[in-house]
Image 1 (cartoon, rainbow, N blue to C red):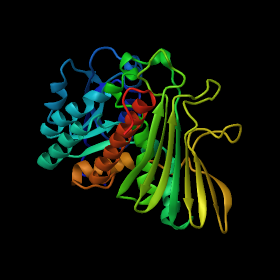
Image 2 (image 1 turned 120 degrees about the vertical axis):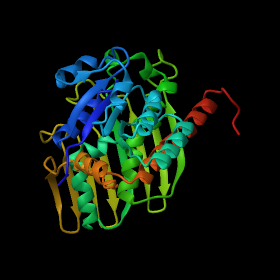
Image 3 (image 1 turned 90 degrees about the vertical axis):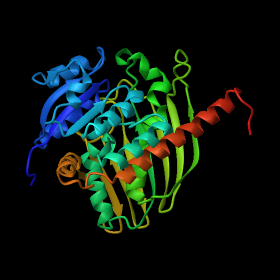
Length: 348
């Protein structure tokens, strides 16, 4: 039980993930103080509709200077997130940031230094884990030994493009960090979580643009092969979700163990059961579908507790940094491969 309700403020609502970030904190008793965003992003009306009573301020310093704000939620344009997070931590605030938490290795170095110097929390909300009850249930089953030792994960992260809703920055990798830095980071997080790997090698990473020639720098597909000290992983992410699918993407996670398998159909069971959070477990005694929708999403309550008690129950800080480091390095490898394939530089 928390001794007090924490106060939260918002810097940037440029990505729709801010809706879930703020609502998640409100659901565990946090008090929303104020919000700031630059300009008029496409998400602005959606944010106002969901949180009509929240006060908008004209200067981001008003959020940072509010002594009743404990935690700052950041969903600004990705390339601006590190700068805002550093400013927040230097103002004595903890931070929850939308993924990607940063877009360059230089940013990540500065974030590490700031956390070490200030003792503040820098937490990246990997929503494909933290806002998905099926992942909560799958981790519980793995910890119970339901599939034996986890050997591999396969993470599939298809997303709907929705070009009519996208701001210009969405197509600029200098502002997004690239597809593996962005949506690929979700899958790296889950690979490390389920295999327990801490030392990870990026075996291969490639990306491409196969459906959007009007945006030549944009990547609409990527794949990634990982080898960890406790398991193997494959990742595929794309922007190809077909219009007929009733949700933004058929996100799936496959967990292979020595004694069984788990499949998560997180957001939809195509032509099957209604609803979300479908889990399929097969082992020596069980072959079944589990409705995991009620398994809960403990991240928000744990983070609120961490803010009050200065603990790391929501996510270890080292894990948070390591995921972003791997995502950035995977993106760099994919960029180099793409450049060679395009003939822009000689192969080594």
